[in-house]
Length: 336
Ligand SMILES: [Zn+2]
Ligand SMILES: [Zn+2]
Image (cartoon, rainbow, N blue to C red; front, side, top):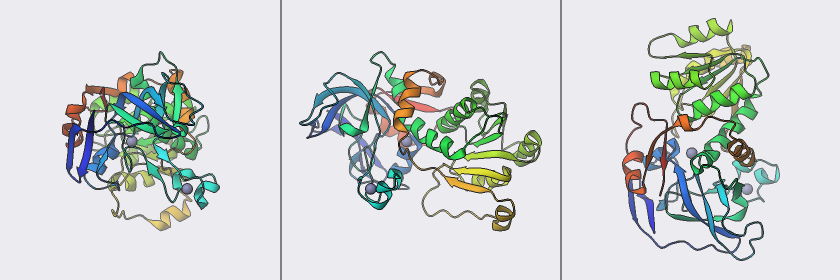
């Protein structure tokens, strides 16, 4: 079968590999749709740890084609979305219900072969059944959505709260929709690209600002009369992080979600954070949120088609992941 392999940092190639088999407790999934994520670009550039060589692809949806020994919950033929993050279940973090902080976390498409391939073998506990007639492209959004749901849980948005979202990629545009569903009053998206600002306004943002052409801190303080209740940083850019911290109102919440490359330092003003009691809450991965993401996708409560800007085959993946996102690009979907 064909698979897109990260052979070493900066070397991603599609090649022919052995078709995997479903081991005990595993499912063999025929991949129908997979999403390219910013993390794939980080892994390609060596900015996020992986177990090279590995087949990338941690956001995917497919059909159960074979079941391994001892598999009880599946019979074959189900459309499934897969939570790629596999926790050990026995370490201190796992036994305290924080599997995203597992000391021995492994992940499909990161440390074991993933979904940028025709087939992938996954532990049955990672798979969640979707309605058979669901568009599998929507199913492929479950994983990023599950991470966003964790961030929204951490944000504790109350109806009427103001929310500022920094970064207008797929994550920012999912956050806009989740903030709207959580009942936010003002939803302010900050992103450079005009097309993304327009999309955000269509999807429920009340305001969209361009950080290149306006003083976004002043604009946000103006709209929210002094600062937002909740800031969600989705860009993973030092500048954005610094700006976002200054947008929170006194006593506001700042959710750290964007992935800044490991080792990058950002100057902050501890005095300001202290006297304003800005509540900094990191949100990492998707602890116990994948089934809720699958439920939202299955019930069509989110606008996802607007986020798909390109559909490609496996042969184009290396080119897309190996280059910076094109202007206007939101989510690139692979149909193997
Ligand atoms: Zn991802
Ligand atoms: Zn663990």
